[in-house]
Amino acid sequence: MLTGRGHKVSVLAVDPSSCTTGGSLMGDKTRMTELSRDMNAYIRPSPTSGTLGGVTRTTNEAIVLCEGAGYDIVLVETVGVGQSEFAVADMVDMFVLLIPPAGGDELQGIKRGIIEMADFVVVTKSDGDLIVPARRIQAEYTSALKLLRKKSKIWKPKVVSVSSQTGQGVSELWDTVLQFRDAMLSSGELRVRRQTQQKVWLWNLIQENALRHFEQHPAVCAELPELERRVTRGDISPGLAADLLLKAFTSTP
Image 1: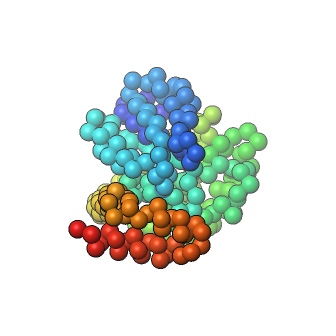
Image 2: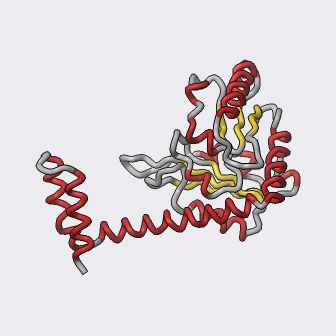
Image 3: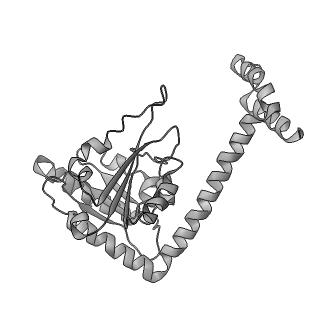
């Protein structure tokens, strides 16, 4: 729909990596058969490679690259996120939570952490036998959102239902996205959000680099195997082992 309206759309899809082999299926592009043939669309599947939060550590940079390449709309599809895995909220202008109907999760699925971060909730697969469950879940989430702390001072998160098969609700969904953009731009809240996000990612990169320096430090590498053995045998606690490693890291020039 968006490419048909003259937009250039980039889809950054993130697939979970196996904890055992480190591999990913990368199946997102094969499921987007029509979009992958569209000259105004770019699809890039990426593995999480062990990064928590539902995205990869380079997703933020990939968004900037896509914008620089002339894509005016960037859609970031994360791995299936849980209560705390919503790092994507710190890199996008609008965080949309997709909820399938009849997933057996209903009200239990109203996870406070991720719901409070959502700017928009979309109930998917609202067609056929799932229309009634989709409407019920839409009503449940609408009620639940009234009880939660608002993320924005000027925007109240909305809940809509859509169907990718029939196209029902898709155009209305985009209209709501545009309303959100206009409201956030006119209030100046979007600029503040982007500034805050840059600060978050600065500290994320600092933490990653600090951890890498720590792991590669000669004194840490020398003491780590023995301390790991002592922890697994129960001779010392993990907390004490961590303190000893940090002491070795800071006391060695």
